[in-house]
Length: 95
Image 1 (spheres, rainbow, N blue to C red):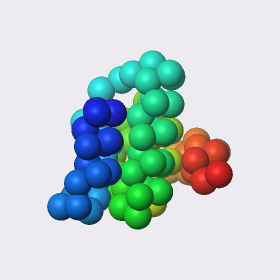
Image 2 (cartoon, rainbow, N blue to C red):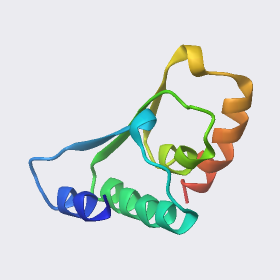
Image 3 (cartoon, helix red, strand yellow):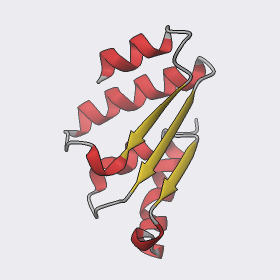
Image 4 (cartoon, helix red, strand yellow):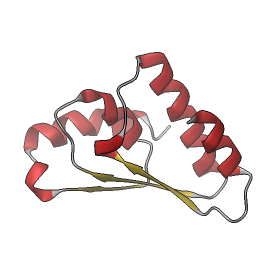
């Protein structure tokens, strides 16, 4: 995934990455940090990162969703607990 993000960053035909939250495989913290860094570099290149889908209760996708400039969640999956879990990751990803 990291290689694909890095290739997309340099490809003028690719304008955005859409993260399908429900389709992301679980990963360890170090791998999530590496993917997050690649997504930040992609955005720094002036390209969009959009996260969409349903949060399944797994914290694994929150750090990645936080790297997106736009997050679209399935309304049936939204709750205040989801908001409170996502907010610290959003704030952390904005340095």
